[in-house]
Length: 320
Image 1 (spheres, helix red, strand yellow):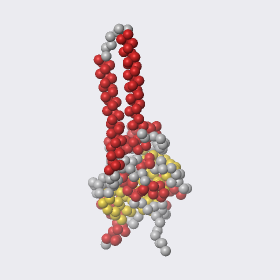
Image 2 (image 1 turned 90 degrees about the vertical axis):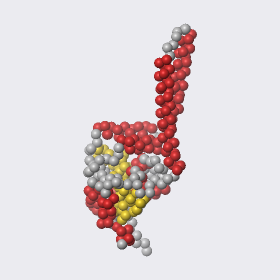
Image 3 (image 1 turned 30 degrees about the vertical axis):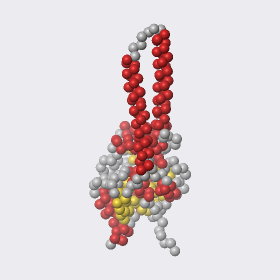
Image 4 (image 1 turned 60 degrees about the vertical axis):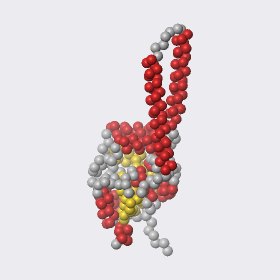
């Protein structure tokens, strides 16, 4: 007789230098989960934190059988942390969220209702971010508008890394979509199946500062665009056609001036044309280089992440 208890919900939370707020997040998340009266597990993925986040997570796991800590061998990034949590999950559905309390645990009952209704994907769409500047809000909206214009699929605007997926979507992510460069919040929206969205207000960070620098956000944006669009690669073709058309017009103009025996002052025109052509050429080569670098990462086939250890109350008891 199989007496294994089924886990209904797995919560995946990535952690990178979050020691100031991790306990507050755990307490609020646990309180919310207890109100649901379902079997659950909390998977903290320590993404190579350099503060004492791991020590705090170990203490939490030692006292709560619901908690499991997946400790990376080094920092692999937020996307890899989410994949690792999904890989180690056992729930009938999985919720991914950040551990800085900007993804409010109080929204989880709404998510569960949607999962109970049979949805396979629930995206959490940020309606407002309380600590965001006007520029940050504009940047976020612009990013999704550009991505949707360039992509063959339409993604929910302002969708975040706060989402839920069913067990069959988890199984797909565990075996397929294993690319090294990924945009997970976009990938889950392209697998098909029954999908819905819930709006939420992103609270201010409980403590600390965001670990996403401008360059990290730029890298994520490039990964998202390259994952869902080939349009940047077609810029070279469009640019080439434009310059070819411009050169024909310039040729016609030169012939007319020659027939009229009118001298052409072409030094400035020549310099500007050469600089413009060189700049466009280098820009297109850069785009091609970005795609080639992503191909290079895939060909190498290196692991998305490496786990140092998995910590839970059960493993602690086994060691003792």
